[in-house]
Amino acid sequence: MLSHLTKEAIGLLRQLIATPSFSREEAETAGLIESFFQKHNISTRRQGNNVWALSRHWDQAKPTVLLNSHHDTVKPAAGWQRNPFEATQEGDFLYGLGSNDAGGPLVSLIATFLYYSDSTALPFNLIIAATAEEEISGPNGIASILPELPSIELGIIGEPTQMQLAIAERGLIVIDAVAKGQAGHAARNEGINAIYLALEDIQWIQQYEFEKISPYLGPVKATVTQIEAGYQHNVVPDTCRYVIDVRTQECYSNQEVFEILQQHTKAELTARSFRLNPSGIPEHHPIVQAGRQLGLSTYGSPTLSDQALCPFPTVKIGPGDSARSHTAEEFIRLTEVEAGINTYIQLIETYVRQLSPTS
Image 1 (cartoon, one colour):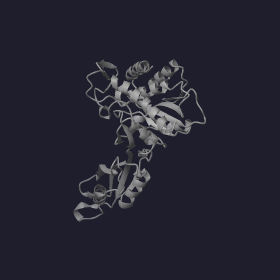
Image 2 (spheres, one colour):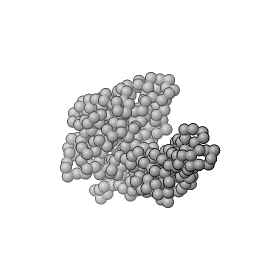
Image 3 (cartoon, helix red, strand yellow):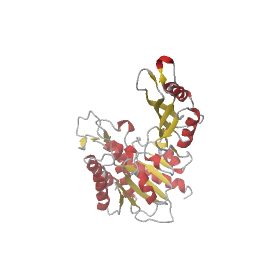
Image 4 (tube, one colour):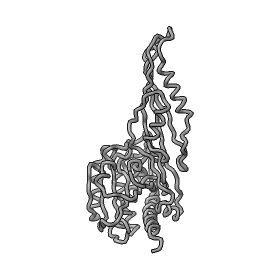
């Protein structure tokens, strides 16, 4: 059965690669995924370009585990020598845009869901969700369907992690800062230079160390990445705008980090969003213990995923390598997909034993 599921998963992956699915333009791949489930007699629901399915033998009394990955891609990077929209196999390598991020993880999770589609033995229900707009953390991706789903106890998020277990992930806040001074003539030493006010802030941001350190992600990291001021050489500028890129971790909420920055800076700060939260799952959680029992290493991920939008415990794991994501000549190994399906199933089986250690 597993060899057949692997073959089916790779066939779907080839179709997904051959179908452009940039963020916000995933309608055709959503249709492919719906057709794939229909072929296997699985009922689906669709909202926008998000497709999901529930266990056949749904039991309202059981908790729910979500299997999730995305089917949108970035646009092809410069430097492709092959056709990024053609699934090109060379030996064990399957090249194509989205093959690694996140086609391989997605089809592996779909195969895992199919493996359990007729099972009544699991102590939880399964939902598989193939979602949109992950690459842009868009409002019409996973966040838009969470209100439609039952209460979720655990999420397994499919991303290319070399089948290691990410149990923490950085969040992101982009902050627009406006330092306000007073205009004056540069020759007469008039005014209050907004650039100098901003520089005081920037120096503080550069030197400040947040007190709480994550064991997996380290400290919160705030970096000033853009600055703009002035319109004429002889006018002291009254406004200086700068942007802070803040990578948060699970010891603080995004709101807490923002408030600390505002307390210590003179500029007026405005966060573009607080949606992209850091995530972390306790090391004693049964899914983490299950992964370690299988010999999987645990780590903190610096890259964002749909974990940031999930208000329940999640882990991130999948075949492929994050270093290949968004690169020219993106690929995944077929043996990685096969191993991914096997490891997902082993992880779920071991998780079940962790939940019922005496059974």
